[in-house]
Image 1: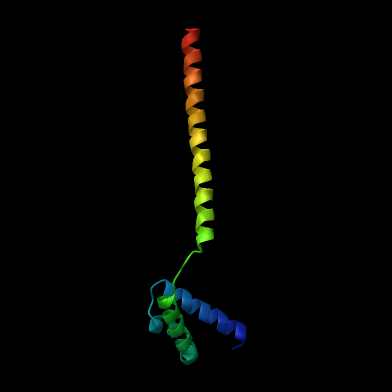
Image 2: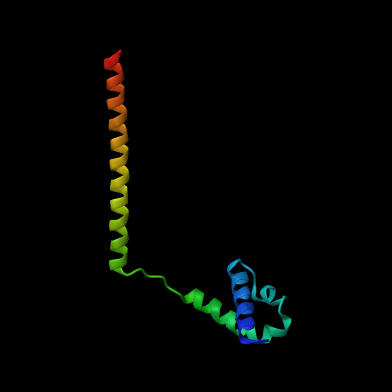
Length: 96
């Protein structure tokens, strides 16, 4: 088995773990590689358990600013639509 096939097999097992399978279950399709893959999968599980996702303050602030701007646009659009509807109603009432 070449290196690319090993990587593909490892990726397949990692995806199985992400879907909730146990290591033994993920390895059932690859019994000949279980000895090689098991330590890698165990390390992956440990790494994920200890991983801490932190967002830098600047990135968080940029996200808040973008969200705020999008909300302002949405609000302006809604106000504009409401104004147009009121204007249209007023014009229709005037023509009666």
